[in-house]
Length: 173
Image (tube, rainbow, N blue to C red; front, side, top):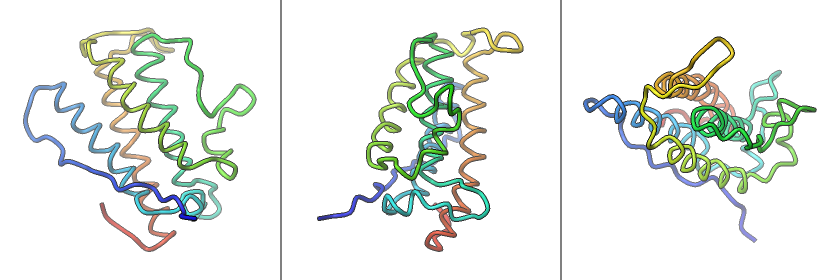
């Protein structure tokens, strides 16, 4: 029997020139692949390891969290598909993406993440960056969503750096 390991990531350099949409998408894709790169080659058990005590944060928890965040911002809010449910969290456990990792299926969660990236991109592909939806503090543009997602990944990729280094000493990517 073989043990599943997280697949290799294929990160392209971020764009240095281009129109605004291409730049935002390029930076988002760069950070998406950075998270995958931090997980590449690790077993399911390693991905479930909370390696920076006392935190219970894991690499798999970050992947699950970003699956929900991608869905929430791009599909539920920007594209207006309010009928979609969070795949891991619920009203009873808003942090299921992070909390329910020990019994999670890492391979299925990675498949869900990769599928969500495709669905998120497709959901907003035809929307202009000026497209708006109502947020808690007023209108939010799709442009803001892209910027927020880049920031969200950058922050969590910093967490992923520390987690990965504690698991097997690997740095970089």
